[in-house]
Image 1 (cartoon, rainbow, N blue to C red):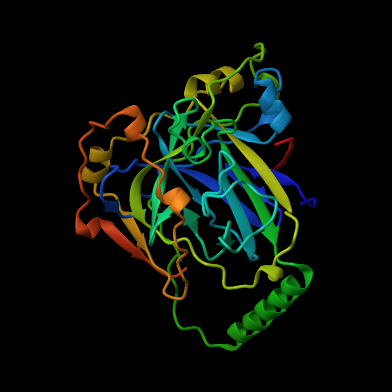
Image 2 (image 1 turned 90 degrees about the vertical axis):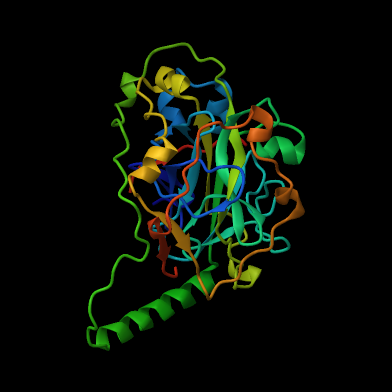
Length: 352
């Protein structure tokens, strides 16, 4: 991978330094109570903005990046499985840091910490808003004030999701690789002790619906403004955002790669790409009746980050859009599963 290049590999984003991010469809939780982690219901499809220059809004072309389709009030989580070498990943929602609540920055910070550490952080389901909990990412349109961006900054300008990766600096990375080499040598000397299961067993997810058509097949429609979407918050769930146990100087001072992720309404997705959007999210009660699993993740060797006042005060989207009247069926105890410790096409970046 070329230095600084972000690529799409299937429905995964690959940032420099071995960082892989997938956007997972999931169940939207009730906005009251604290819940276990809902599993994936497949990946959101991702497409490059530059492949649809004739149909995307002009401001999207200027920002570059990628886009994915999402329904109003649909929930998502970010999976970092597949990440190999240590990396610091910044996650912005409307250019507000989802970890610290501070404005988007091109530099890492520790007070407060404005990034997650990979691969220790296997996923992120929402903003860091409580002790050992997060508030679920939920898609809402800009203009209502319901997004995290709107509630924290008083404006809704950017929307979408922003990602930025930082590798270890050269010295730290060389030391880490040497330690890993020695550890691998030690393992080869040890006698086998039986097989191991998957580190993070997940529910079987259906394949992402629809294959990406050739860019040339995009409809030759005239570009126009598209309804802008951002992320608000929904229900609370048990999930820790881990404190970095390395000194800040261990990381590179400049990001290795970044990408702007535009959120598209399903009708606009069809208009822009010519593809059918994924079906609407599965009914929660039907999911629970089917007996599919939920998850509870705990890493006893990691330290949870304290929530910030900024993100702790963000109100759920139901306060803005009205109550959700869909009945909630609580999963039975046996459905909650404890988990153990824990190439593609380049994406064009733009001005954001």
